Length: 283
Length: 269
Image (cartoon, rainbow over the protein chains, first blue to last red):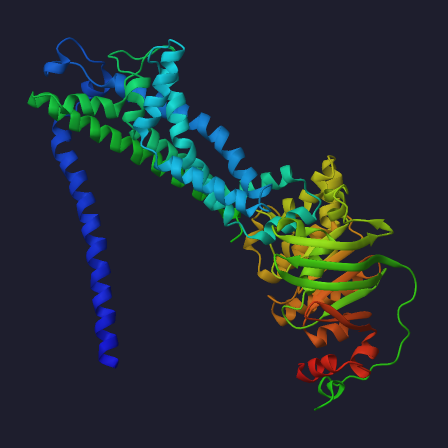
């Protein structure tokens, strides 16, 4: 009996270890491949210049347009999205706690929207743009991506707010606080989680290709207004990767390295910021 | 069956039931959660300026009764509250009553402390700020006053700007008491306020309660017999959602009427 227990324990230990380490190995392999193929093609010129004549045949130029376009797009979309998502998530967890059934339905709908493929958002936005006769533009891209990442942000914040102890809610109300003042307390308490939700949305936004394909378009220039089209890194990768020319393919990997580094940088900054503010929170 | 007074080494004097006006009148209160009938026909008068203890085993509805009084029951879906609760003669179970104003009159001290996610000073100042006190010197003075009131000032005066969560749990509970007192409540609702605390911290809270009853009405939910004896002027014994007996400590401990109470006391500690 005792031996069987030991074997069982060992078996599950190695099984879990196997899955964990293989997953990490696969992820490392992907990053390694990108780095191996991308870093040699990476140059200062590549990240500071827009495409010049013959860029798509392996001549001079860079992906500055796509880097800046992606940052504009993801930042704009994340800001619009958080401005809508934060009040929604707070409202769900402060004013709607009584209505468990409605709340359950809202969460289900949001989870479904989270799972809707970005191309559907893109196509839907495109059909609206056609009705109004609008061309692909940075603004259209920003709005589409904002709607795409809204369910992600709302649900990510919702999960954090849901776990705030009800005792803190009750204590705050008992001081004579209005629901709006409770929202302020919830905001402070959940700030690290809210930062994480913002990052999650930003990462999904900056990495998304399909939603911006029709809506933001693609251009070799850096947009100087919201109504101009904008290039994005995922599309830059997509277009260059489908080229038969080796130099162009290598640049696709270099663009992937840039994208990965951007997300890494944002991730580190947001973790640092949230660790700074989380010291006050109650567990 | 060993008699509870012997186990507890009590020598209680017979005193008259606290006379005088009552601050809360609860009549025909029924609370149910979905199909579960939690409180059944509660009729109570809570005397002003005294400590009233709700005594009873876990799950008898003491906490629900406490939370009905400042309408925290509103937070729970499926919770139905029927009947009447009057604070100073004014009905509070109407949908129309001003909830923040009502709750501000009843300070809550929970089973474990929930400091606000801010520093020690701001925890006490929060209640003042939402009441619209803007004068910085007044806020500083009142924060100091209330921290002294709960005997916490000397322990925290050098680190008022550090997070409240850095305090020990006993200190946090006294901070929560100070925070509640800062909004000038009339009633203090204490839900097993010492259950998470060590004996020394518990004693400090109990001492404060005896001091505070000069100015406030205190309702204490507890299942600790000794604490009830030490603190209560008026005891309400509850069992399975009903009030079984109520009276002075003498009535309850030395002259229990019902078998349920006798059994509860003989199991007591």
